[in-house]
Image 1 (cartoon, rainbow, N blue to C red):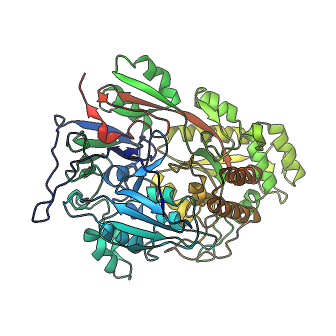
Image 2 (image 1 turned 90 degrees about the vertical axis):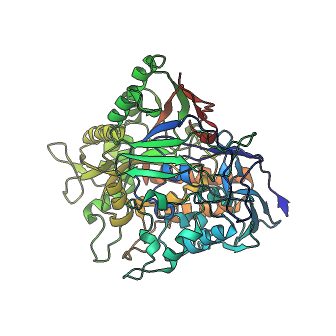
Image 3 (image 1 turned 60 degrees about the vertical axis):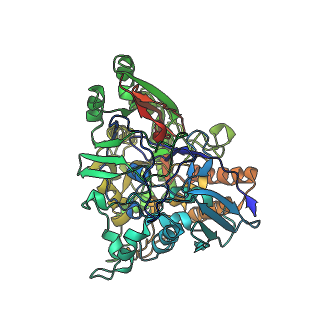
Length: 607
C-alpha cells in the first residue's frame, strides 16, 4: 500500500454569496477523554467573552438535511465535516475526520482511518458505522434522490464504489476502476449521524418514500439537528437569521488544550437585497460583506473610519453565463419543455453564434463592474493549470453586432421594416431571460443583454424570480427559455472533473439539456447531441488519466468544444473583494479560501 502525503493542518473557505470550503485548525493533542461510562468529557473551553461573528447570506436555507440540498449552502460548511478537507491556502487535501488514508498499488482501493474518540454534537461516538451509513444508506441509496450521488459516479457506465467497514476506525472504499478525482469528491461529502437518521431511512410515508426525504426540514427544532463540525444549530428565524453556537464536542483543540473554535457564536443574517447588506455593514451590524464593484469606491473611502479592510482575491472562481434551454424533450404529459419554434432557434448553432457576437463583454466589465472584472471565455477558472487562454488558441467572440446580423441572414433569418428579426417562417424572434431576483448585478447585466440583442433585432423579456423558484424551473419543471446565472463548484479550479455535474450529459446540473433524474417523471424524446457525447468522453478520459500534461490536453479540447458549440456564453467575472472588520484577529485571507477558511483559529477583539 502506498502512503498518502497528509499534513496536519485543517482548513476551510467561506464567502457571503457562494459556498466555499472550511475545515481548519492545528491537529494536536488533548482531544476528548472518555469516562468509564463512555460519555466524553468536554475539552478545556476558552470562552472569548461570548464572542460572536456576524455574517450575511442572501438566501435562506431550503433544508437542514445536507443530502437533500439542491445547491451548496454555506450553513453545512459550519456544522459538518467530511473525511478530508481542502487547505484554504494551497488547495491541498488534508485530514479532517480521517487522520490518514492509503491507496492500493492499483489505485482501486483506499482505506481511511478515522481519528480516535470522535463525537457528535450530542456527545454520541462518531465511528466508521456513521461513514458506512452515510455512503451506503444515503449517497448510494437509489431511493434517496440526492444530487450528491453524482460525485460518486465512476466510469462511462456511472458505476459507484462500494464501501465496507474494517473496524471501528477504518473504512475501505473499493473503486470499479482508477478514478483520479476521487479524493476531491470525498472532500465535498459530509458525514451524517446514523444514530439519529437511521430510522428515517428505514421508515416510509404513505407514498412509500423514505421519511428521510422530509427529515430535518427548516421547521425542525434546531436542537434535533446533530452535527460534527465546529458549530451546531442553536436557532433559526425563517428568512431572518441562523444562529450557530460552538459545538462542545468538536474534536479540534489548540496547543494548550483549549477547544476550538474560539468564537462562541456565528450569526448568519439573511438579507436578500445587496443594498440592504451594504447599509447594515456600514452601520457596523455585519463583520463581513462581499464588495460589489458599485460599492467599492464608497467602502474604500470609509475603510479606516469603519475599522475594516478590503481584501482582493483576484477574479472570482466559477463563471457567470447566459445560456439557452436546448432541451428538446417532452414532459410526462407529452408537452414540449420548450416551445418548438423557439427550440429550433436555440438549437441552431448559427443563432447561438450570432448571440455570442452581439454581447458586449467589454461594456459589462466597464459599466456594470466599473472596470473591476475580467472577461472570461472559458468555464474553467483562469487560475487553473487547465485553463486554455485565447492566446493559446481558445475560440472567442468579440463584440461585433454587424457580424451577428450577417450570420443570421446567411442562415435563413430576415428583418422586417421595423428591423425586427424574423425566422424563415416569419415568426418574430422573442424570448424570455430568467434571472434570480435577489441578484442585483445579474439583473443589471440582463438589462444590458436585452439592449445588446435589440441591436440585432431580437426582442427579449426579463423574468425575475426568487432563487428557489429559479432552481425549481432549471432542475425540475425545466420550463425556461434563456437563463442568466452563475456556476461554481469549490475546488474545480484544481480538479476540473468537479465540473462534470454541470457538463456531463447525465449530470444533475446539466441544466441546458437536463435529462431524467431519479425520483422525477420520465422525459420523452430526450436527445443528447454528438458534441455533448464528446464532452462525456473527454471527462471520462480526464479522470482515468494521471499524467498532468495529458489531462491539460483533454480539458483544453473540452474548452474548445464549449467555445465552438456555445451551449452557454461565459461573460465577465468580477474581482473578488471582501471587507472584513479589524476586530477579527488571525485572519489569513487567501484567494482559494477567502476570509474564513481558518475560522476555528479566529478570535474577536474589540478595538
